[in-house]
Length: 232
Image (cartoon, rainbow, N blue to C red; front, side):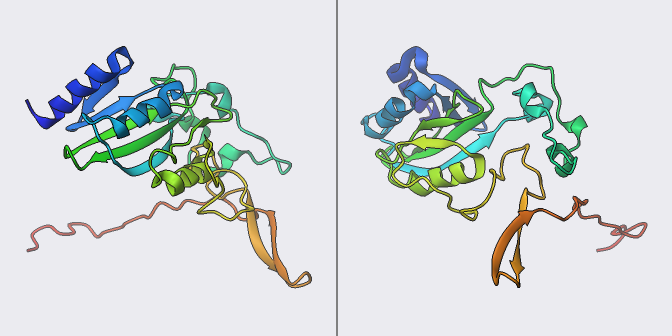
């Protein structure tokens, strides 16, 4: 029995029907409901047969339009600003890239993904949960289990807007404190909502609605005909 098979067998034995495990690329992903998030993670950390004493990473994921399928079709309606410019107009993807009617393969738009390492058993595990409310995604914090996720949870809150209940200091960590929105959400405009400028009259930095126009930023590489052919 391989190490991966032993881990899979152990998880099924301990979690029973609760264990939703997928094996892909020689890795295991365990998906649990948000109501079992803390309980399951605590067991993964404490149980001697698992002993995942180290949390390597925690991140958020936005599955909106994942694989060309909309998780929440109603959320894809463009928001019209005073200037008549929509959020979707401001993004790199056009409205055609925001499909609609097909059902999603996932129970929610957002996910929290945790990567664990057991030094004792020399195995790794990915654990995932889906917050129930897409408009206000939240899950309990894991800081009391792995202190290393403190900044990771702040990062997921900052970039995806996922709230971690019970976190001791949940505030932005990468963007400015006055930043509006969450930049890693797929419906967030590429150019953002506001910009900062220095106001010489007020003699300080101020925020104002973004004034730049969206532009194509995909690099274009042009090579002459026969480039690389016959060259050593």
